Length: 532
Image: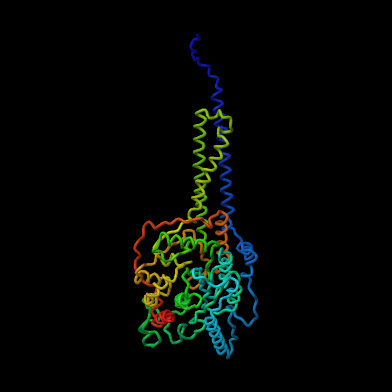
């Protein structure tokens, strides 16, 4: 029978300590290399995707490079002879007969406008077939900023399912170049309608600027003494109407009435109507997202009567957002690396180094770690582009790329007096007033958090800048969409619905004025009566 073995302590030679120290150093080196690699990857990604926005070439050639060659035709101007003015109307020579020439031109423009509106011609209907009752109608309000309009058309041309839509251009300025551009569209059905009470066709009479109208800043007492046309009706700030500001609200109201209640092709239409403007730019998946939102609203938000595809975040904020996401990415990577170091140290302490693998981690564990990294980062990076929010409709936030159906429109037209008599020259503020003061079911919007409609107009009625170059903004929007496309932020398989956490009661707002003239009230209201 053997005796029991008694353990005898061996002399401390320091080998075990040196071995453990070596493993710590090797692990630290490997972790450092991995960290450096990830940092380089993030910085490189950030510079490749977001950096060009800061150092981009904003030339026309650079913008063309981001547009498929087949659509370059929409960005190319056609030269006309010298008889045309800058905006497509005939340029007068300034001589004694110039006034008569302008009158003749106005008469011809009015004749053409009435002809277009009477015929209601739908271009490309023979190619794409008649409008279906549930198809999307896209209505674009056009003035005369053709450069922006060109890029909007290019963006629409690249949208999925655009061939199934009817694209309606509503003009308040008759322009040969714009007409040629619109009529060259070959990717969907197209219709043109023309606002018949424009400043262009009524330059010296209401609703244009009548010489007998009161100057904007004249005092009411002076206006009464002068006996100017609208002396009794200044706005709530004491100012008199300016035709160039009142036209936009008139035009918006007229086109909505025209599309829903007066066109033959839309008589039985029950689908959505999307409202855009000439200085908007759409993402290629805007119709895809709109369909998802419509399904979600029918299922989970019956009170949602407006869908909105755009928000007024400045374009560069998307890059800022992207950089914030990259910063979060770096922080997450650092946390994961720190956890990996702690696990490695624990494994070494527990003898995990005996596995014989470099750094004490098996190949299986490495792949598991990489998989865990991808799962943790990607949902955070992409989640905002899959979210929609439900909130009361607010004019200043939800008026871009908005869509609603005939049922919502008829609710609005029942409140036509509230819209037409509200002392504000903005159509969206007037619609806000309708929601607050008249509608039984107030306007509620489902808005996509990752915008699919962008505002590219730097200059217009309300914005006067010294530099109205459009290339810079257009280039930035193209960069934004390129980032979204490459990082798979477009075409989400589903969208998640959130409700605004704190919904403050919207205060009744005082209008911006500019709409005190009784003639504007009656003209506006008559547009609704025409369709009844």
